[in-house]
Amino acid sequence: MYRSFGIFGLSAALLVAAASCSRMQSFELSGRIDGLQVGDTLRFERVLLPEWNYEPAFDVVVGEAGAFAYRGEQAHDGYYSMTYHPKVGEAVESDRRGKSVIVTDGDRITLTGTAEEIYYCTLGGGIYDEPALAGLLAFQDSLGRIRGSYLRNAREAMARGDKEAGREWSEKFNRFRPDDQAQRSAYEAANPQGSLYLLVDRIPTVAYRPLTESRAFYEALSGELKASYFGGVYADFLQRMESLAVGQPAPDFLLVTTRGEAIAKADFAGEYLLFYHWGLCPGSIWIDGQVRDLYAAYKDRGLRMVGLTESVDMIRRVYEGLPDDESAAGMRSALAGMLAHGWPEIEVETDRPENGRMLERYAIEGWPAFVLIAPDGTIAARGYTEAFFKAKEILAGVLGGTHPE
Image 1 (cartoon, rainbow, N blue to C red):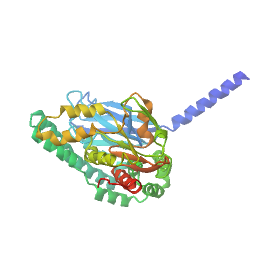
Image 2: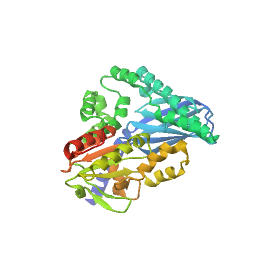
Image 3: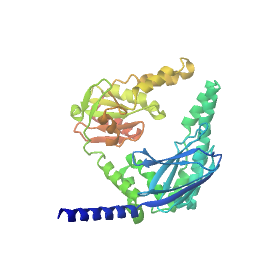
């Protein structure tokens, strides 16, 4: 009896393994990239949506100058980010973390361009053979090249000691807002039932788009896209965001502040609590003063606040490293205000697991982000800059008194 059961179990395991193997997708990647040298490495990381986490996937070591080829397998449709690591020297800076590529079963994806602009190279094969998508990506790449040149100019100016020019180029880089809306709208109009590119692109945005808009996008998708791997990711994230909608109970939390004090959701019962995720980014620098004004206006009327940031010490080091002259006066003032917040701060990148899970629990993907929790423990506002002004409106209505305009 025991022996027969063992054979049956082994047979079942083999069948499962065989079925699993049969579901693996095969694909090929190849490229003609002028300037690639033998020994250079192209590192592909798997992008895990919706949180934009990255995990190692595979490396391609260049064996022939100017070209590369790779054959691989994946369990399902994949979304990858490629970064370039020259054997000698460093990759040219760009405005992107890497080159994004979506790979499906049987794809033969090609990359064409130069090593100096490798993150703007042209993709072909798979979904990238669609002319409308190729046109949209070409336009985005052209904007990226412009913004990337500002960053390189800033670095070069600083390297030769021209701080004024460096700051001017840095400001141009930070103020540059690539506008591809017309091209994107045309592409969306050409794909009324969606496309894999649009689906993957929209997944992270469910965190901050109106739920009605995100639901409408999903309902309009073709059956094939809904049944795809990324269709499932989108549906799961949409369901999760519905649980974080206004009026829903705010998830519980138990956090430890930078002063070592433990705080929990129950500690704020009966009061308004505003979470503020901030960091060293233009959006946070722009709005931080308004957040401090809001807190000053309502802290004695029933508003509590908690800051969420990656590292207060990092902000402090940047502040202390700024030149003590008129050229950096604006930045010094902004960072000084950030370092003088009157509310408890939580560092999310620490060895405290619960702190680290806070952003995921509330689906906070960037800076500045806000979550207003009502006295009854439900979510009153959640999102980015627009959520701050919504919170400001709510507090003015229910707490009254003088408030910042």
